[in-house]
Image (cartoon, rainbow, N blue to C red):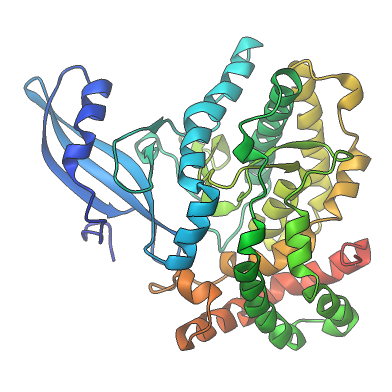
Length: 409
């Protein structure tokens, strides 16, 4: 499907829903002359939601202007809808964009630093779940190909913005108290455990089946088999913040497709970095975002060789911005303490995130095939855990984790 092709859209998505918003944004607004929804992402780039780019041709006091927004709305997949219902994910993401993000940006403005973390968000009276955002493409923002991974300059740009986000959210909690309760409620509830166990068992089966295909698997096969039986416990362990850790409001899903970059003309290094897809924020150790991002989204050549270098750069930026925000000096984490936290979370990322991130694009990939048993799902999961790109990455990651003690639980 190309962007010129009309995308399948929810039946409730009508141009009339945007009338009040357009009147608010454009005082000279008169009417909508045309409306079109097209795919917001390439096929095979999103498993869990429908992403649409909405084009409006709008009359503004005698002249016409093209206006666009990005809309995210859920698939009609029963298990995913149940997760949405229990976690209120779309309402949470709207709140993060509308309130949390703007508050953190204002905190920096108050100390003399102008920055933004992401797009502006808008509200409409929709009959279903949604997140409506500013379309950043006209401003030159774009993704980097997830299959290539991020180079050094892009990684450092992300880590700076991540450190700024973590610092501001930690300072906000320190000075103003806890966020609304849903940022402290576990992402995975007890009632969801049967579905989580089923999904983990399904994915784990394919990992173990493909393990002999990975280089040097003999050295880490016992550790991986042992961890497989503890995987759900490890996931649920991430739900609760450890008071001994340095905790902040984490992004929760920080990988290549959820990061946008802007560039100055002729310069390959990013001049600005924004976050998207903030539907899974969680108050927990900052190590979760770090291991999640660095293992899944960096170029292969940097993933292991520059890991400690990247963590040091993140820590430098975190300390700098905590000091800027007057965070108590005695509570600022040491670099050593960040590394101790990193040992807790690695294996979950290898199993749950790296396979879909490193999978070649397919037009018909979907969430149902990713987490359930079916003939189509069997083919997809075998590709995820056995394709050459994943084998290359995991053959480097697992020995590295073993040697660091990150597979010891």
